[in-house]
Length: 432
Image 1 (cartoon, helix red, strand yellow):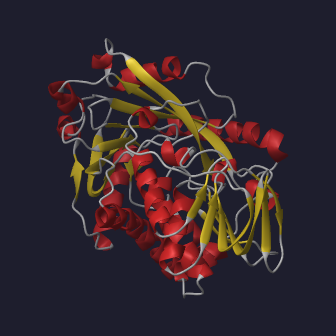
Image 2 (image 1 turned 180 degrees about the vertical axis):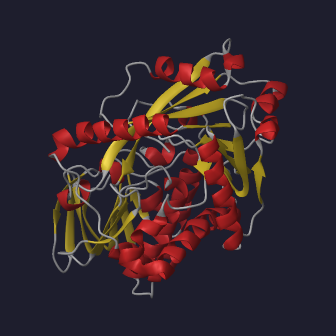
């Protein structure tokens, strides 16, 4: 997860483990595929395409993983989203089951990438969904049962109300569901490691290369301030930062702000008391909290997704009270980092993966709704399969689901959604 933007340094920038050399695009060049966006979607699509023999150039407006890919909560969680059954009328029951399986396979793609290339990104396994209410806990029981029916390959176990101290040092929760097949990591170091893989495969990465104009056609010409790329295919991977580059896509994704604070380093005993077992944790509320320990034992506490388009003036002042409601024992600990980022959210909360109707050689993936760390890697594989003319049932399934354009245009989309989310939160409070 991750949202609206505060300038570096974030905790992740302060602890990055490599630097990249990615000069801006200059002059005219050609490639089989041009990718716009240097986050997880773009980087992994580049890797998947290069492994299939394509020449690839990637254009990033700022720096590699500048957006949510390098700022998110670092939670690597199974699944594509919630309520996948709502898409049965478009893809059938078997299609919905396929989406469920792909939500599990997505985590395995990250697992294999990290393991196969020895990426140093502090990957740890273990995650727990936290129930705030008995209704949430009942939902976790159903989730456990569904995972068992699917033959989920990793251990899952319920945490009953009286057992919560074995997963979190807080009295705020009434149950949990442990998943040993999900976990957490340092997202910026993962992205930088993947960028290095792409470069080793011959992908040309260009930072500080904002795309200013696209000429569509049988071959596509992509313009920046100092150069242009002629390509057979184009991948738009800007997600929440696509802006006006392609209105047919940007109108279907809403940028929403989420924020993270990082404490000073905590001692081993306190860290273990707060999060026994060092799992990633996330509650079930609409305005959720998510948190974990970093490798140097800082609590990274995030959440407060805002749809209004307005960022808090002081993120630490805004987030610290939320953290203390969960962990009052941290009242005397300093907040040493604070930052935000922008996630892309679609109206139906399903990632949007497909190609433009009017331009069949233009592909896209966006709107991960907080599940981007794993789903971007899945999207990249599906995009590469489609561009390579390989059979891709997954790509076809995603492409068959329609996505609504948010009403109100750029100026009114965020306020209208903020009002809608307020209604859902009031409904959540009333429902217990």
